[in-house]
Length: 163
Ligand code: THU
Figure (cartoon, helix red, strand yellow):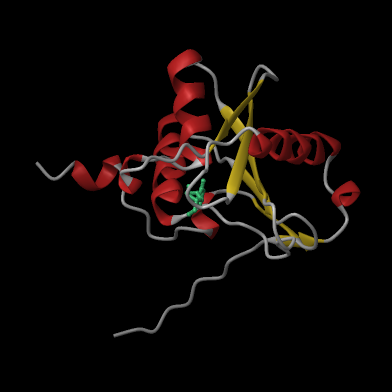
């Protein structure tokens, strides 16, 4: 038996202007998208903005439902919209942030587990990493260079090749 260790690499800053300009612009677009979320039940409006290989930006926001599980997170709304409209384009990068009415959220809002799995699916499909940047309304911004840092030992299509 051997003991192994995984290292997760990420960058952290509280200065958006320390990010690449295209990434800080994406965070601004995610914030705008968050304001348009349909989140009457949680009041927690999440926005996601992703940049495609052709430079186009696609945004999404959480869409809630009175039957709670029928709603969908901002990240998946954006990714599925991008894949539906531009199936041949690579997703380069995704930025996630929020907009709330109450006290400002200072903790970066990371993608939930289900959204991580979906990001992993599209990384695997396009054979190219997706940069992920996430922030709260103020404070720290975190950036990782691919889903591996947020979802190690990912289940993907290779695991289905069992025959
Ligand atoms: N939410 C997202 O949109 N993305 C996440 O990664 C975490 C959670 C939404 C789902 C729900 O509408 C609200 O935030 C509260 O959980």
